[in-house]
Image (cartoon, rainbow, N blue to C red; front, side, top):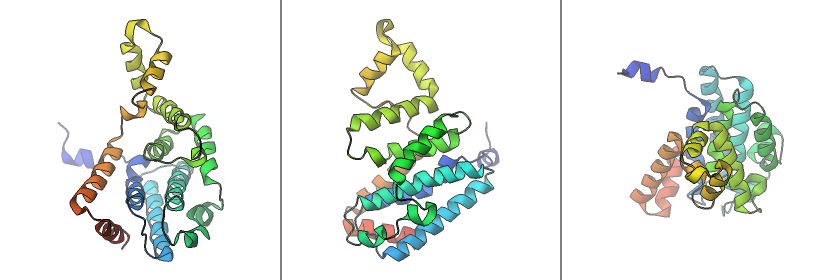
Length: 231
């Protein structure tokens, strides 16, 4: 039996530490009123500073922290830029990716970074999990205008790298000795593969958001929830 102290001492991963940032992004996706742009930006920068500090305290390598932070920043910027926020243009004068990473091409660089991290997937698993979370929660980047199937294939492939046990399970249940590559394609035609080993973090974040929506039932309550999160 594992006692409470042992559970609390479990080393946090980048995915664990990113949960607060992802929660904010999901809150932003639930409304189109983000309040004052400068106030939002200040709060968001503080949130990312906290993310970095917590990751360093957990003993995570600085380069991995930077890569994960980039993914989260790209996701947050895309959320705001794709929204119907009336003051979006004020955010666009200096999106977070420019302020923190001096780039306006995060939608493409996200996938460049992802490709580079996957070259050494075993040693970069922590950072890759954050990219995976961003993708499964809705980040599209340079695939925004392309067929959903194209991005879905990227997510499925990344999922199989991060969860090889799923690939082995598919091999075991592949019907009538059907090659597992073909079986994967069959599954892709229905439920995306990344649905099966959904992270506990995703479940918790989505559950929190659904509960917020179901309890309030009003857009103004969602806005108030967002304001409280940022205050």
